[in-house]
Image (cartoon, rainbow, N blue to C red; front, top):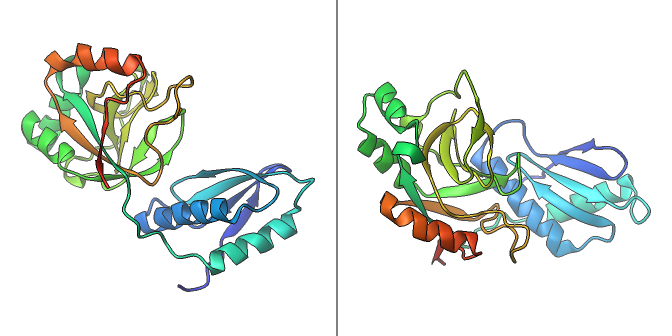
Length: 241
């Protein structure tokens, strides 16, 4: 692997962003996730917490334990021995009710592409989506490998409130949401899965570096699955490895 020289961007005196690129790119994201895992494995004294993103990893440090020069030197050591992870990723199957009140933009997305709603559902649900990062709000899962044949720019007029569990597309990205929030994305469906429950162990069900596939389900199953999820059951299934 060629020598990797990231940028170190200070974030106050207790954190630094280690930046590997400036654009959304699957290879850069894979590098970020591999580095994040390698940093955890290295257990460097003074590293408190890490947060991987599409193109960087923010690292919270204890400045009384390690200074920035020492931190950068240890990061370069970690990168020198880094091999991007090729291990199988945990893959989740997530139930989704598409269209209607659950996905109020489905028909509009289909019309803008000259497709039927069922064809949009097929194209959206046949993908395997790596989870590139969690962000914006707790448990919001940003997904790569979105189908560009159904992509649309974000809405001109964002909605001030969209439901928790919304499954949506925006620009070149795909997402499933964890909590109610404003959004300018196009809502295709909704899942009962709670990806963030502060009183559950684990707090976050699906994490960065894992994979997601969506399973279309009938609206008649919503109430039962939603009740199970509200009680803390995952509802989502692990199907691999």
